[in-house]
Length: 149
Image 1: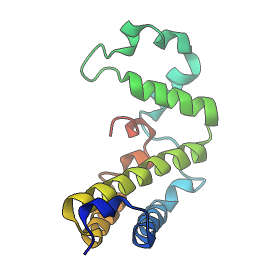
Image 2: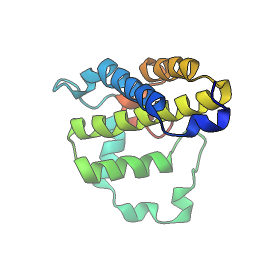
Image 3: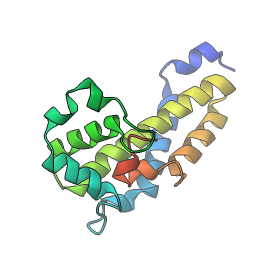
């Protein structure tokens, strides 16, 4: 059995586990790339703000800090504005970016679990369950939740 310090070292076992986690995430959420998928619910509110308000409205520290508990999310707004600058209204671009973030989080979760559990097998199970769980994966298909998760 490998020591906990060596679990972070890149090797074939970690590479295979990370590949499996990414493959599971891509397979389960392949539907987000279909042409029928589009922005959902309150995504349009954030996209409207990204399109019709200028970046300069966020440059003041007083507008960047949250003004209310749930009324505004400045980091989320900045992220959606950035995604809009790159992809405009192409949902596929958003889906690729958000699914990549979700899979990266699953890989980080796997690495953390491997360290805490001292077992790559159980960490792999945790990583796969994390990447395929729809409750955790809202950011993979719902733009607004990307930066709040």
